[in-house]
Length: 115
Ligand SMILES: [Zn+2]
Image (tube, rainbow, N blue to C red; front, side, top):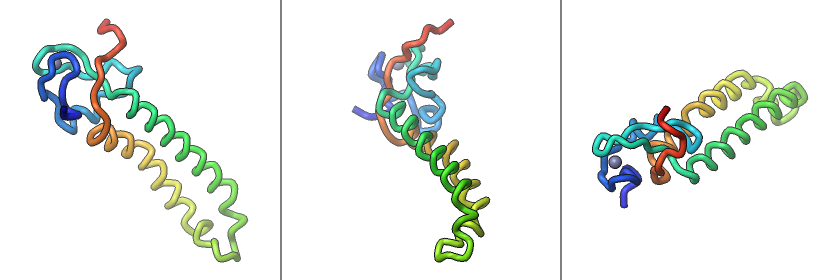
């Protein structure tokens, strides 16, 4: 079974872009083209995204607090590129969960009501 298969009707009605924006378990999800019912990215994607965003958030704080201390050491590139590193982390914070939603983990029926 493909990860782009609708969990309601079994038709392969999703593509990576549509799946990327179907959201997590707690979101409203996207409507299946074939049966009109809502689907979301399932538990695996939800857990991955929660863990990933927590790690990125922690890294940004750690780098922000420790970058000035690396000046003059072998790690002074952290100080020099702090802004770049943290910008990259912030971008990945938004992009990586979308990519993971697009290419990994199967869809599940949306739990939330359509209203
Ligand atoms: Zn369907």
